Structures are given as C-alpha cells and as structure tokens.
Amino acid sequence: MRILLRLAWLEAKLLLREPITVVFTLGLPVVMELVMGGVFGNRADPAYYRGVGAMDYYMGAYVGLVVAALGLITLPTHIATYRERGVLRRFDASTISRSTVIGAQTIVMIGLAAIGAVLVVAVGVVAYHPATPASWPLVFAGFVIAAVAFAMLGSLLGLVVPTARAAQGVGIMLWFVMLILGGAGPPPEALPDAMNLVGSLTPLKHAVILIQDGWLGFGWNGKEALIVGGFFLVSLALTAVVVRRRTAR
Image (cartoon, rainbow, N blue to C red):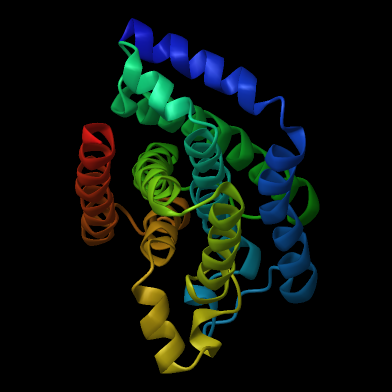
C-alpha cells in the first residue's frame, strides 16, 4: 500500500506537468454545462429531463461526464504513452508490477475527477442556481462507483490501443458518443428509440442515472449500481488478461 500511494503521488506530479491535457479534459464538461444551461435554462417540463429542471438534471449528469472524460481521454493516453516509451517494461523489470501502476493511475484519476466534479458543481451553482443534492452520501457513492468503473475501462483502453495518439483519438470519440447518447447531452426523451438503445449500452448512461438519483431525491438505484459495477468487473477481468499476457512476453 505504501508503494502504491507513493507511486500515485509521483504519477500526479507527472500528470500535472502536462497541464494542457488536464485543463482540456476538465474544461470540456464545464463548457458543455454552460452551453446546455444557456440553451435550456432550469425551467421544469414534465415531458423532459425526468420531470425536473434542465440544470437540476445536468448537475448529476456532468459529474458523471467529468469521470468519463478522465477515464476515456486522460488515463488511456497516459498509459499508452508509458507503453510507447517503454516505461511499463521498466516497471516489469523492477519490483513494481503493472497492476500497481494501474492502481496508482486509478487513485490519481479519482482525485482529479473529484476536483473536476467540484468545479462543475461550483460553476453550475453560480451560473444557474440548481437544486442542491437531496443526499450527498448517495451522490458520493455513485461518483466513486462510476469513477472506479471508468478508471478500469480507461486502463484497458490504454493497454490495448496501439499508440498514445490513437488512444486519445479513440477516447475523444467515445466520450462524444457517450455525451450525446448517454444522458449528458440532448434530453433523452427527445432522442429516437434507437439512439436511446445505444445509449443504454454505454456505462455513462447508467452512471448518470446512478448519480442523478441521489442528487434528485430518487433514492439509491441498486440496479444501476450493479450495471456500472458490471462494467467495472468486465473491464477488470479483461485488463488482468492483457496485463498477464504482456508481462509474460
């Protein structure tokens, strides 16, 4: 555990040496939040946004979007860069395993996601005065589950995508698809059934609902927690297989 935390601290300092990547990833959700808030305001319409105001809806959604941005763009690019530069092989030759490296990256990502979530909430509160969370503990629990799931998915992408540039491109593409179809973009009620079906196959859709339910006072959504947890377990299993095969080479 001591080695893991020390490595996480070092990884955080290394990541902060690439401020453009961090600012880009954390800034995207804020920009989208301001755009959607400017378009839809916060007037409740029973036909859209689960019957609540648009910005009440988007607050929980954009907390999830921060997690997705870091998990799909920043983390895979960082891990793929390590692969390209032979850093992971040097870790293999030391006493630090790839699993420890991924664990450290996960800790850093969750920390950055927490900062990004606070930024999104602060901007939303100042600009649009949305409703405050009905249950902070449920929102926090949903955030942690979503962050761990996206961290593992991002680790998997970083290990299998050929290059860092490809990892960044794939991550941005997936992020925008999930943004539009996963509940953080246009009102889901306004999307065609086929698009909503595709959105339901993405982890962001379920992470958004999980966080929103705690925020909006709908209680703990055990079904969505299990689905997001399922994405984590599948990603974890596939990551373990890839790590084992790469280390054995």
